[in-house]
Image: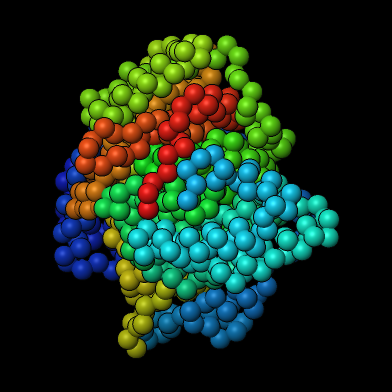
Length: 112
Length: 493
């Protein structure tokens, strides 16, 4: 159960444009108004289809996140080879080795 | 073009090892055929002419010196372009990774190379492996070699088309909800989705980590078995990879399964099936019955819920996995105006870099995980997932060595056939997604053709196996292959 889970069942059917914008913000996707409308329509249809699951009696059924259901496997705590820092930095679209560059996050213009 | 059983990895490596043909000639012929077909098929995102030729020369030199070589020495292979390779780009058919150069090799790719296989190129896919038609590629769609106006299936459509068109005898794909098995069926070849954990996922660009597996395409069951033996095994870089002993599928594949039992469920004969799909199932039952295989009826009552559960679980995992593409460390980065922020960089880089289907799935996955919806969707889907696995567990307890299924409800559809209707495309996966949710192995193989005079299209059938019992399912597929000639037919392209 998610900590913020409401006690009542949410309306899972048609999405509002507001919800689509909220989801896009969570997903870090800058959508146009036309895309918001398109996804509202398409995702509503998929969610409506998914509502068939709610009719099932799932009392006492434990969620299955991974078929392995394995416990964590730890490697020995010994140093091994790693990818070269210079190569990794060279992959960044903007860098100032040994750092990657991002827009200013502090002061004016900041606020990620 | 060969239409017999000689266009195989097994035959090719034997000829090369016996020095009746050189690796260089073999690889050059594969590259020439790929070049010639590319305008029609667009199966590849990249071809490695110089690199592959140099590697073939190196194999020939080792053979000339009498050195031992691996079990795939000199065999040309194609890799789906979501497998990392330090040579060329690893694009995932996305603008996001158009220029991405991986600093490492996927374990499965490394194992192929260590076995002497020559990677001639990377194959086209639905962007980030999200799709069932290979139409959602940033580089444009791949065509089905049986009918160029139709899709090859997806998401591993490029690998399927390359093998079906006899460019390479084997190729690797990845299967998250059917992305190897459905295209294998659409293209009249063999495709295997191994048990979850059989093959290391290290270097496979993650879509849905609890569902993804790498597997082979081939023109014969034996070649698929041989390729699997090469790529299977524990990898310290993937903690979910099994540490079972090395597999010997290739040496076992000709051995009949004694007292074999195959389960068949009512749900496989849906009225929504294309008639040729249902006919192929009946024909397969007849073939197995004649071979002395016992056919029993099983129940898979959760079949109708598989798609809904799958698209919730898969998109939830995808939304999390694809969060790493932020325009900072690698991949596409939007050009910002001076007043734009880091937040703008994330949102705009992702909006520009991801195509519509990927964005749709990220949105869906984010929604089902979001506060207030987590329990109604994600947790419910995980419970259904356990029920789906329970259906199969019960079938196997009844004594089935494998379960017979279609690989898709219809043969290859026309390009654009599902455009504008994502749900219709998702429903194409009805017979494949349960296998991933339950972590089971499955093999698709040629099971017949449509009788439509307009187009002769292949129809695949699928055997779903018990966890880590791929050997039974492959041997049963081989028994069918020996009795039928469907797989010997190659498209005239």
